[in-house]
Each structure stands twice: as structure tokens, then as C-alpha cells.
Length: 268
Length: 300
Image 1 (cartoon, rainbow over the protein chains, first blue to last red):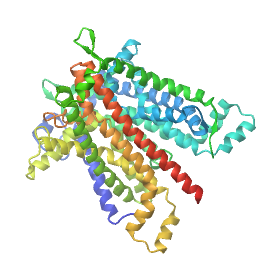
Image 2 (cartoon, rainbow over the protein chains, first blue to last red):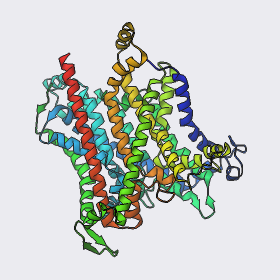
Image 3 (cartoon, rainbow over the protein chains, first blue to last red):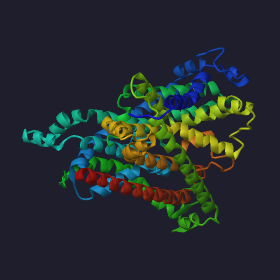
Image 4 (cartoon, one colour):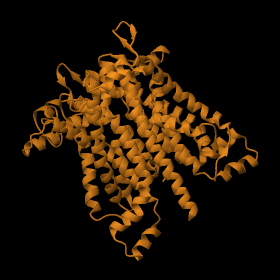
């Protein structure tokens, strides 16, 4: 691949630009509040783990992480399992209203969460799902299902149709073909789709916060508690922020070899 | 190869249809219902017909003025970040190392901001930009630039834009990188034999190959910046004054802050309609580009 002159400098500068604010957050999470407010230090002079200890010992804090992970995982499973057959249908068949349906699905990916916040609140309160991980997981389907269909459709289209036909000639039933042959063939595509579902569900806050109050409150909403009458608890806020970055970083590390092709959504 | 016509495929699409209909159509119907009514609390509703819509599109009323002002701000914001992020993303993609462990390292760091929860992105920049405890605010103020995003409109705008560039340029870069990776080495060798300049290689080989992913990038960035809520809300809260109040922030203020359901619902519908139209234009352009490409490949 051909690159441009000075590429190392450009890349280095951009990576520093990306990492500096994150470093500052990590740096602050290890400082005492006294140090944060009183002096400007580039690294913690009196390093402390007090903020992390507080988060890991206080249930109202660490339960937030569990709640968040719970609805993210639920959402990823729902999205992928309903999107797979649909992706196959869109890739292989033409049927009444297929193009309109596909566009309608995509348009939901683009619908602003703010529009749906209040109706969702009414809907999920009415059916008794309010303040459960299910409410958030289902609500996040509105943007993750279309995205998963879109990504998986690209990957299914990459599988030659002869494979389907041979399998059916060999006497495979449709469900068996689907699970035994198709799913393993597009495993990396499923991984990519799962990655994106995880990502968008993990980073979304507006719906997650609106649909929960006590039991299923996500960590991102709990973080707002650091504002109190005594002022901001900056160290605690920073530590909580650092801990929300870690799951994402882990996921990226696992998919690092697929990131490039994954972001092209299987359709370059 | 052409797709076969099979109406039974609907059974495969049915689960998706049900899930999305449940979480999109039902709530949207509530919104349509609210948009025609007015409420004074106590769950009492009064018929208001298209009154809210008339007000919404009339800048002389309070509601219309707020809506159109926030819409203008939001469009300006989207255009600015597209103008920065798309070229920058291409440059970053072209600057990627060719091989070795640095490729993986760069990819991981690039993807990192994309997986940080949006309110934490806001928190990071809220802290980073503060003149008293944030590195950026502190340094800027100490080299003589009077910077304070809480009280100065322009500083608030700069902060929100830099934050978005920090957050999302990676997405454009990763998409472009994926497009570039799909170019066979033979193309470059041919260009070298022809003695093509660096710029010619970019224009004739790299840019056309990135066309499709760039379209996806522009679509995603435009849509997401048009619906932006959490990050500027955490950093500036829409202020100072109303200077960084975008459409979503205005909408949430009206819906969940004032509980003015009728107004909020009417605003939601118009907002959704704008997005739907833009989405449709992009979709048409994209499918046309797709079939054109197929024709070209068929011709070769």
C-alpha cells in the first residue's frame, strides 16, 4: 500500500492527540482530590487507589457495571439472532417489499434516540419492563438490529450461492444448513456484527438512563452522582470513567485483526 | 447473479420486522398521537390539531424560534465536523504503517475513542478543558490564550468540535483504511511503470476505491452528528446561554424537562422527517453507485 510523505509524523501526532485526554483521565484517577484541586501535576505525586477501592467495595457503584454489561450482552444476543435469518433472506431472495423494508430498517438506525426516549418510557412502563435490563436491551434493538442486518447481509453475500445449492442437494434441511454450514462460514462476520452491537449498546446513554431508575441503572448514569453539595468528586469521576474504557479496550484487543475489514462492514 | 423471487423469505425477515416494529412503530404512534394534543398536566389532554406544527415552522413564536435556531446550529456543526473529519480521516488512513506490529497498535489506539461511552467522552473533555484542573485549559491559559468553555461561546464551540474530531475521526480513518487495503499491489506497480505522480495515484487509484466506504462514512458521520446529544450536554449543557444547544438537546429539554409532550412530539416528527429524507437521498445514491459498479465490472 502506498503512503504519503511524513506519514510517521502525522500518525504519531494524531495518536498523541487521541491518547493525551485519556492519559489525563487515568492520571487524575490516581490522584487524591486535594492534589487535583490544589496543584497542576503531570503525574500523580502521591498515587492513591482510594477511588478504585471505593468503586469496588460500594455495591451501588459496582452494580452499575454489572447492569450495563447485562443489557449490552442481552442486546447483542437478540440483535444477532434475529438479524441472521433476515440477512440471509435479503442477500438471497427477492420478495414483496424487500427494498422498502430494507430502507425502513436502515432509517431506524438513523432515528434520533431523543425522539424515542419518552415514548419508550411510556411503553416499557405499561408492559412492566421498566427498570429491567430487558427494557434497555430491547430499546437498543432499534439501532442495533438494522446495523446487524446490514453488516451480515454483506458477509452472507460473500458466500457463493453454489454452497447453498450443494447443501440442499445433499439433503440438508434449511435449519440444519443454516446452523451447520452458513453460520461457520460467516463466523468472522458474526464477530464483526457482535462487536458493533456491543459497541453501540455500550456507548449509548440517553435511552439507558431514561429506561432505568434503581435496579438496572447503568454505570454511566451512576457517574452523575459524583456531583454533590460538597462540590465535584473529580478523582472518583475519573476512576469510574477509566473503568468504563476497559471493557471496550478488551473487546478491541480481541478483534484487532478484524478491525480493518470489520469497519468496512463486509462490503469494500 | 440475479436473486430468485421467493415470497417465503418473509418468514425469515419476520423476527426482525416484529422486533423493530415493536420498538419503532409503537412508540412513533404515541408520538403522532401526542403531537396533536396539548396537556396541562394531570394527564388531561386537549385536541390541538396541527397547531404545534404551525408554531414549529414559524420563527416568530417561542417554539419555532428555538427549533429553527437549534436546527441551524446543528447543520452548521455537522458541516464543520464533516469538513474536518473526512479529509483528516483520509490523511490518517494514508499514513497507516504498512506492516509489522505497529499496524495492530495503531488500529487498537484508533478504535479506542469509539468504544468509550458517550457521556465519558464528555467527561474526559470536560476535565481536559477546564482551566483549573485540565491539561488543555491550563496550558492554553498559561500561554496567554484566554480560554474558558463555560463562559465563552466560541471556546465552547471549539471544545465541542475538537471533541467530536477526537471521538469520530477514527471511524472515517478505519473505513478508508479498509478501502485502501482492498487495492491490489499490481495497481501500484502499473502506476509506477507509467511514472504516475503521488497525487495521480491518489486521484486515479486510491480515491475511486475509497468511494463507497467514504459514502458510508459521510452518511454515518452526518447522521450521528445531526443527532448528537450526550457529549455536548455533558461538556457545556447546551450553553453558554443557548449557543451549543443542538436539536436533540432542545428536544429533551422540552420533553423531559418541561414535560411539554405536544410540542416535543411535533418537534420529534419534523426532526425524524428531516433525517428520513437525508437518509433516503444517501440510500438512493449508494444503491445507484452499487449497480453502476456492477455494470462496469460486468463490462470488463
